Image 1 (cartoon, rainbow, N blue to C red):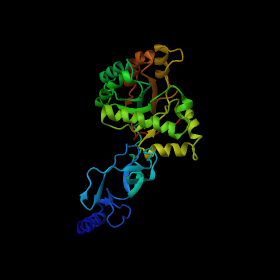
Image 2 (spheres, rainbow, N blue to C red; image 1 turned 90 degrees about the vertical axis):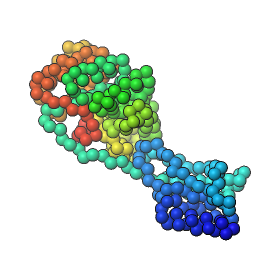
Image 3 (cartoon, helix red, strand yellow; image 1 turned 135 degrees about the horizontal axis):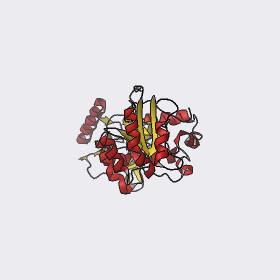
Image 4 (cartoon, helix red, strand yellow; image 1 turned 60 degrees about the vertical axis):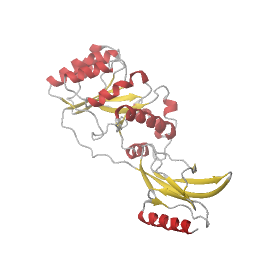
Length: 321
């Protein structure tokens, strides 16, 4: 019993130092659950939660074989406080318990930096695909950086993601499954689960997180999702910001309606007004658009334009505006 009291004093000291989170009070002689980490335990929004750990003590010291039942869920893509309850059972009876508050904390974003006048940001949707390598070769030839909004279920071609990152391009998230807008935008649970799935793929292949996103169909189509949220688009963009992400539509879409190389080149090289800050939408899954790319770049460089990779410091472009 003296040993147990001594352990209790040690636990109390650890709590005061912030090393352990407080557990529930235990009866004399009953096991004690000590939660590692401070309370509340803060965790960045959008990052898969990792349990910080716990210790179970009884009169004989630490119980290395103790297995706890954890009750409660954490939605890592939604900032806020969540409660996890840890229970030690003896059969069906709970003989010790403790609670942890997990605070999902919004990530930070850099301030917007207005690009120099005449900046063109190329972006490619729906890949990676069999032609993505050719796009990268063309970009490398002219030392042009771009952004690739990927579809996560393109599993056959995901091994090109490390090259995209290594060559200084931006990897953005389009979605995991592009087939059904009705399902993707059904509610926040469906959309953000899809987004987090794709984010994990980006991390797996590159060791980095994506910080830019483009809604499939653009922000106008994402209105189906915005309509399910109390604040509409305002809440949707705020939720993305909590994840450390900004959303980008486009203001230049040169791909020919006739799906021709020449039509795409003409559309890009004959703007109604000189480009000031152009976010160009193309698709590396469209062969005619890939074949038009080199002549588009040549024309832009000859005209004195500069290229930059779209990233989260760029001004957002929203079709609904």
